[in-house]
Length: 195
Image 1 (cartoon, helix red, strand yellow):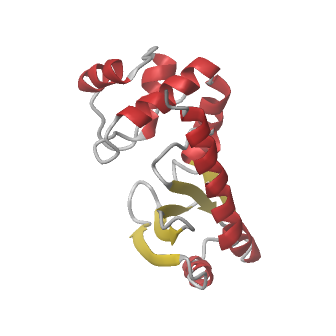
Image 2 (cartoon, rainbow, N blue to C red):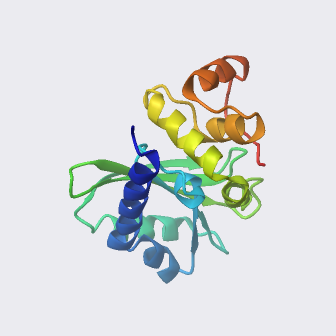
């Protein structure tokens, strides 16, 4: 029987090592900018999708500071590439940064850094979502979520929030039940749900 919790713990430990190795928090802080962990690492539910998510805030917002942070991050030889998208004129009001980090086992991790304007409707929202999910977890729901993540093809798996919603809100307990749930709960865009 697969020990999903042990796999999750190993990957979460590795993710925290990557945060330290890249100095990512200190890089942003040195520019007077706050970087908040969000997503599956913050909830304790990171399993096999090797990504680390941050939401970034600054006052005032200075575009050049965001580029300066990425220039410093790129000095780490394990950062293999960086991608950028300017979404300041969209509803999200943010810059999207994606960096790819190669770990000791030659596994590629994606680090997502979303630099959000303070008047964005999503400013602080996903931090609250992650905290509420973490608080709502029980040993049984955590095990169900990890088992569902393990049982789905990572390339076709919906965003994790859909799995959390199915398990925590609707009582879905296994992969087959989740597949049925997903057919009746299509997702499109940002899922705005929290327990």
